[in-house]
Length: 190
Image (cartoon, rainbow, N blue to C red; front, side):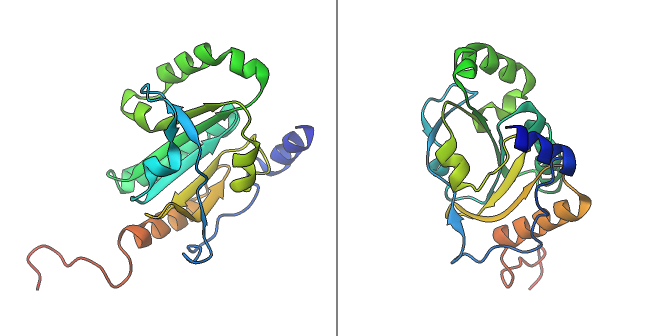
């Protein structure tokens, strides 16, 4: 944990620069399948299954520091594409944290807009397998993942969003939603 803190201090939460292009579908890995609860009260929801079939942007955080970075990413997407599917995944590790679960969930509900409760997932307990599957080496910073309709991770970012990274995320999102060659003609155009 000390190593993670040193890295975050040195990089201000930026562990890598987000790619400028999508990962090819045949090289993309699936978002891990695990169950989590939502703030809306749904229990043991398969996050991967819940998101499959739609292009989605998922913010992942382990600590409040990382969670605070996610609204810049998700907000930029929602401003440009209000219909976009977004999700927040809060992974709370540690025995002490598990004992505080009711208080933490109550605090999250108070601080998350009610319309986002059904897309805010909370998992208490060991998340080592999830961290490994998502290649998350630092739990302090926020992570962002762009999933295609098959649930594969096609783009990722972390830390504080830069304008260039937001542009990249938006462009990649638009490619997945509206693949090149499938551009819709304006209404009334032949």
